[in-house]
Image (cartoon, rainbow, N blue to C red; front, side, top):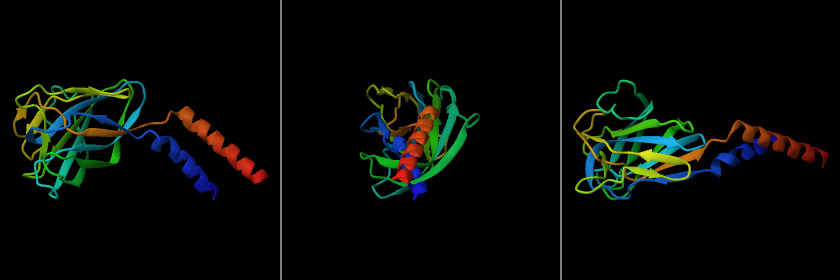
Length: 203
């Protein structure tokens, strides 16, 4: 019982900080993969998912390779040198105008004040990631109080770092993330849990 109480208490800070950064709402071109830079303003963050639009009909399965690197993706868009394949995510398209989830099983850690590049590329033929930018000015910068994003380059086709590159092309959808509790916060929580258990024993 005590173990359950501690685990439940430790889960509260993370769950209460689930947040979203919105990028462009609708795609108007594609398909392939999209690059982005993510920079937390003042707190360490962890990215848990991306929601974006795909070229396949609703219900069509996709696989997205998720790459990361420290620093900006510019000008490292034509080769996987210096990039890490974070994971490959399976998902299902919701159609060309509706966001579909790219849920990460291993979260991407973002350090406060440091830029981390992320590259999402669908390797499923006919169901690539769509993006925004053709015939109009892309919203290549987007931010909130926690996180600043920049996205201005895309690559076509079903091979990561392959195909043709186009710019400006920007991320469509949103980025889901958590605020990572500071060690001091976790220590204070541990003290609070210990005090609660002592009170329960006395009672």
